[in-house]
Image (tube, rainbow, N blue to C red; front, side, top):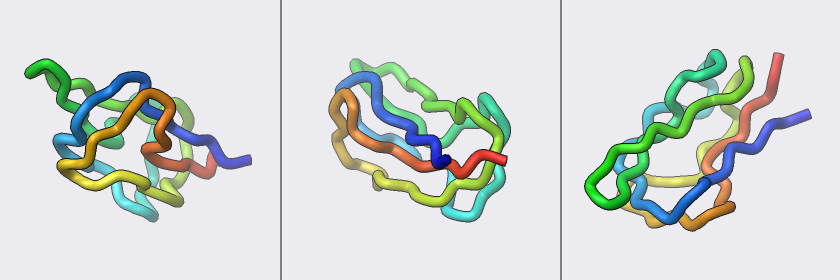
Amino acid sequence: MAHEVNAELVANVWKVVASVGDRVAADDALVILESMKMEIPVLAEVVGVVTEVSVTEGQVVTEGDRIAVIEPD
């Protein structure tokens, strides 16, 4: 079952680190958000393959917005 990674706060997407097809481990950075001049990494919670990246650099996300989808191993 696919694992959704969602934003936990309102922020700007500063950098997209992961791409579709990337294999990630738990705690690997997927994107880096910027809020109030702080950089906040959004980390993978499971081991698997990134099947969707739903954000682009410069986009504003709000709490609950989907950032990425990971297909767990």
